[in-house]
Image 1: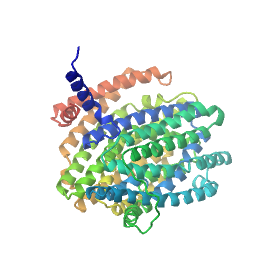
Image 2: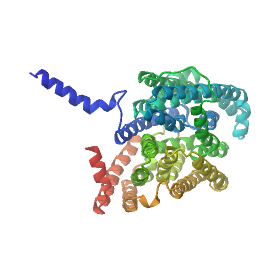
Image 3: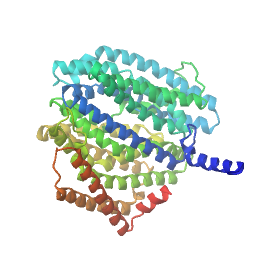
Image 4: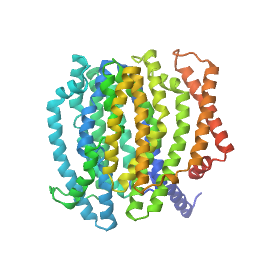
Amino acid sequence: MSTPDNSIEAATVRAGRFGWLRLSHTHTAFSATLLIMASTFLSGVLGLVRTKFINKIFGAGQATDAYNAAFQLPDMLGYFLVGGVASISLMSILNRYKQAGDEEGGDRALSIVLNAMMVVLTVAILLAEIFAPLYTRIAFPKFTPESALVCTRLTRIILPGPLFFFIGGVLGSRLLVRKIFLYQAVTPLIYNLGIIFGAVFLSNRFGIYSLGIGVMAGIIVGPAGFTAYGAFRNGLKYVPVFDLRHPAFLEWLRLTLPLMIGVSLTFADKWISSYYASSVEGGISRLNVAKNLFNAPMSILGQAAGAASLPFFSALFAQGRMTDFSGAVNRSVSRVLATALLAGAWMVALSFPIIDLFRGGSFKLSDAVETSQYFTIFAVSIAAWSAQAIYSRSFYAAGNTLTPAIAGWGVTLISIPVYAVLFHQMGVSGLAVASDVGMVLSTVTLAVLLHRNRLVSLAGLELGELGRSLLAACVSFAGTAWCVRWMNLPRGRGHRSDFIAIAVGTVVWAALCAAVLVGTGSKLPRQLLRRKS
């Protein structure tokens, strides 16, 4: 029988072990990264389930092309009016209020930004609803009249999404400044569940439009609703005031304007690819499936680490600790690059069985074969995509949104003719190659600019570790690819062969990675084990 003291002690241990899951828990940089990575992994799993259901129910055809294309106008609206992610530019302002102990002033500044941009976004959404048919004809000139009509209707359903994403982003910035990450971790899960719910339970009644309904339900309940609950739960005092001359609003506008007018290839890639792929029936859908499956590991490696690191990078810069700032960025980039090289080897070696798992129903074997080609090409550039997410946030943490905006425009303008030439020479596969080329150029450009601005020194990268990881990636890829070919499993005869290939290939890949890393004296395995313990 346990004594009261023992019960209290046991409860304290449990609270310490699972305390990071409390809604108001304040995270460290590492625990925040773990939480966001876990969230991104679960969101990626749900995204894969979502992709599976969409493939099975709707396949890769005109309807799914229209659905994927319908996101373009809402995404552009959110990108050009609020810079894509509202919290990036607002966090540095709220951080300063918090450092000064002026919680009331910070809430007032947040309220002013929220109120002003809600008006702007509402007007813009109404105008976009009116001109949606015209935009569809311009952006997707190769669509059939039926596809254009479906795309326009879905666009009009999804168009209010940027408003609710903005509300969630602004309110979420207050939580992030306080190192509270659980809401940011949970909302993507709710969003994906909304789309899955629409596909499974509403598709018989509403057809392809069920996906648009699910999208809006997920956004309203998740990013907007749950984040608002968290902000008010943690003390937000909303002020219904409209003041376009308030210093905080003017500063936010100054920081956000470059994000509004700047075009990053991470966003423009989908717009450019969709323009050309719309001339091939199912092209947008197959390309989107490949990109979604690629985004699952890429988001864990790059986006999660970047999102979790941003508040800590901002704090280091605000405190004037430039050496620590540079070191923190280089450590993050080095570890993400090293891990991404290994992950890329696994993805390329097992590309077909990975994609084939999502075959079924209306998504045929020919769709899986073609999609796996795109996925393989995307996987080659996973290291560049992952590092770019951290490098861009390093500029944002330093309060410099203009330099990455100018760089983004330059890289995008250079890349557009590359997309055009490669598409006409290689078809849709050429669009994936152009995406890789553009992303490598974008990542290198940001790294050089950070170095030239004396923010992050290139000399701080752990080149030795990157070399060891590259060697491990090459060896593990060769061994895994040979093993899959040696097994000679039948293609397209069921998912059992896919599971066997992935399972055996993963064991071989992991064993070869570990052998090379340990054999070459890499610090990466010890770092991962130490962090885990």
